Image (cartoon, rainbow, N blue to C red; front, side, top):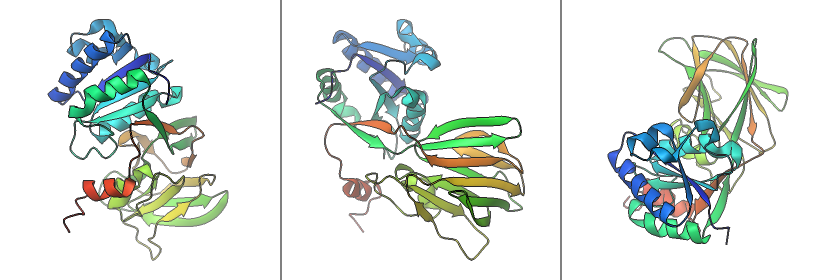
Length: 287
């Protein structure tokens, strides 16, 4: 048993009316239970719940749980909003795949009751810590799924120098490179023929995208290992974290990637069988 929640943030997918409707219902139920409810200002205004409006940088402060109402993209966005404050995240599947979600919309009322009573569990997931070193300084970001460094348009390949644990490893000639967590191993890394890894493991997966070289395999690295990616030359190169673009990298820029010290905290209500979930989401049972 964990503690009963006292503060909850609701983060609906703004492009899905059903997500907004469910958020409105959830807010009412939580407020009736005496729980403090927060929403980003735009979301609160769209639902006529302006008293619940909260600034983005304050959303996760002293927050118990953030509820993401949408698909996996909404879940990743919500984790990015509250991870630094240590808040847990519950995913409600109002999307297509809903691979990261723990609850379907029909189960939400029961899930809210269990949050209020403290009848839930927390599952830790490995996060990426990405330090980007540029001539102008160093910036740090975090991601639950993956870091992607790749060219932004067709044409020349990107040349990326890779150091592992401070030692030169190789230079990739490719469309790009993905560094994924076990959670992200079923996302873009999977599309690039990377391995699927159980989220029970803590590791990193380095996968090249369309490499023009004999070595085209993924590398699975330990949670304490460091990957250093340096842009050597090539066309304009974009850096994205969990699908959000964080600008271009130019020759000489470096991304240093490792497992973050603070994992993502995911709300669950029962043990989740990863392999059965994988089978169901990818429709393997009928093959």
